[in-house]
Amino acid sequence: MMNARFVMMLFSLFFLGTFAKAQYTMHKMVTVGYTYQNQSFGEVGGKLLFLKNDDVIYRLGGSALMGATHSKFAIMPKLQADVLLNFQKDVDFYHSYYFLAGAEGTNKYVAPKIGISLFGILDLTGGYAFPIGNSGLNGKEMKGVNVNFTLNIPTVFIHDMFK
Image (tube, rainbow, N blue to C red; front, top):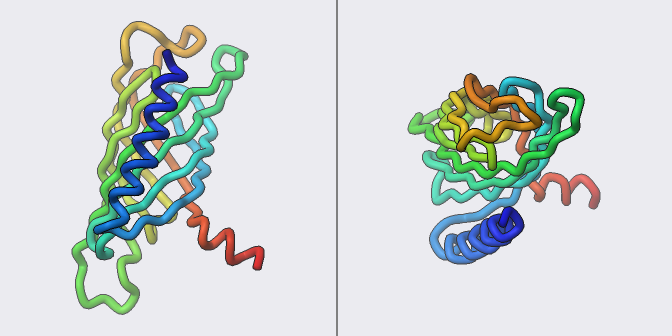
């Protein structure tokens, strides 16, 4: 059942990216980060960034949260959607920070979040996680304060580094 959801998510992201290119510019990013959700998790994944101008940016992403719960290693898939906003005009250094609003979900919890993003690359967000069903992660409930610190590295930057 979980594999079917993952495959549907990948197809949805692919088709959304294909159709969104007609109106929006799309950029791919690799993400690494830290998530606190009743314990510490490392995060590795990718995001698609959609923008028409620099005032409003949309991001969709998928990643894996990895950490140990009750001395057992666990991996949770995570999907997220963000909107980055900055309506500041006539600034020499364009859009150095964005206000961020979004949501993330795993197979254990759903968490709305707000935060700030520096250049759209370095994110600091916080929210509150609501558990899905009665299932926890290795016996630990995934509910409560949610804090994320994420570095989004554009793939164009990685490609240019190795030229």
